Image (cartoon, rainbow, N blue to C red; front, side):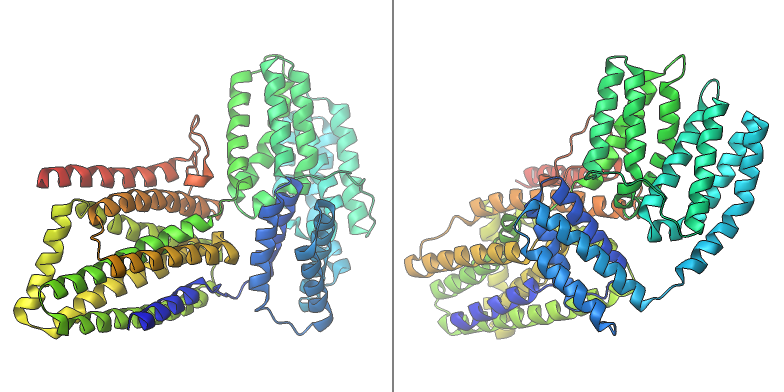
Length: 569
């Protein structure tokens, strides 16, 4: 019976470990490619490979009527997965992005010339108004005209970005330089006129289908933005404000090449950076520079960009701890029940302990299957990252409950009283059903919780890491079971519970932080930066009010539990 129980437990583990497929838009895949590019540019080759592996796992469920374009994506993805060097992966990712764009266009054909003409018609009125304000050299009119033009550009920029990222970047940069000139203490009308003429020509060229933008050489990532901010802060500290302004201008030049990495995750931050950085440059060129205010603003942007650039992943140790904690607890309960029955000369009831455990495993497998179906169905019409964030919070809530339960059983007397109280009821009634239910509930609760826990971390761990964690946990469980059965040595359960309590609280702390952070990236939870708090992704610590408050609630629950347990003694 124990052999069958172990086999079914392995089936449960394998079902949980299977990747949950969900219908996903190509936008989701473009974000993944962007992540892999950013990680590769930052020399995070292992992280880039993990991102590609997850991409590949999800891509296997995608079908398309455009066989040629779909095959091109498949081949480009295969090359990216096999890339043996930094440069090879960058080239392969570029090819993969282009192939995916081609597939998207083939499935959703558009008339690019018509799009450009429509863009030109929509921008024509605001461009004429802007031109009149420039000619009049009226600062107030210029400011109003720029804001109107910028609003229209933000509303209609999409075809430019999709058809020519170079032209898009050139127009964005020209707009930023106009904004800088307008915001100076004494606006340089000649510079405004020059930049406006260049802006008008860029728009005219795009509408005509001409590619006249200068190609900006180099590899750029969010780290490039952070480097420019750091250099600007250093110049500000040295009171070299011209050098600081040059660094922010360089930031603005790079911005269009990497802005999608931010806009797809935090649209509010994207808008704030794009509108504020030109003002930072003008602030640095004023006669009286408010260095403290500018430095604080740059600090805020650096922290916010770092939060997006940092990608949290769980390791095989996290996966092992979940199954080890849950599986070991269930095993100990079952073994304790069997041992108690044997010592009470109730050998005929031990088989029902195994029957109850077997039923718990079977229903846990069913729960895993049902929850996978629900997860996939929900993902069809919702952003997967959002669901992952909420599932992670649910997992953390369940972990808190488990941790509190463990905490209350972390003394030898409390554990013995608990087992004897439950077993006393079963034996006194002579109820086989009661005996089986104790075993069933202990296993089913652990199995169902394990499903939730793994769903909470599955999106942030590779299949290999998850499988390794599960294997490590299974080996440890097998060793413990062997020792328990062969030696009949009483395991100091209360000591184990104390250690397990610490582990489960730490993991809950991490999952809470990661989940809230994920929801912040998807713009479902506001983000308020807290200065002075370090970012430690390995434990889920992020310098935002929202993540810290959520984790503070967990710490409060732990403190209350400790006080309550102490009083119970």
